[in-house]
Length: 85
Image (cartoon, rainbow, N blue to C red; front, side, top):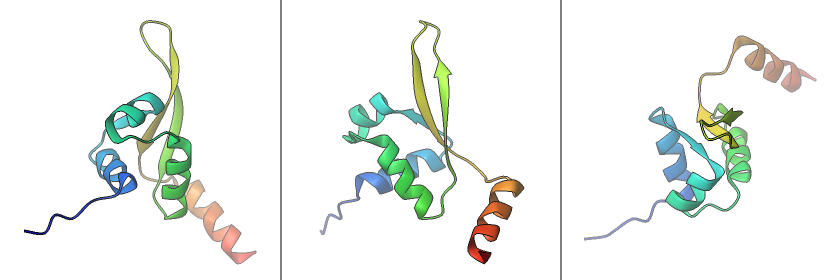
């Protein structure tokens, strides 16, 4: 039996596509990713709508939370304008 190794980026993308969100520390613990912003940037360049928002938790701590979503019409229009230039 051949065991195929899936990349960390692919595992994160699969996790986000299921509707989950993830913080930097969760990405480090769960997937071994040290720089989640770089992974999010890479996925954005591949055409995925990865959003980052600041969230304040009940204990007062704040963190960047990454999430996969659907792009708005404005984002799509901006992309087409950039391609036309």
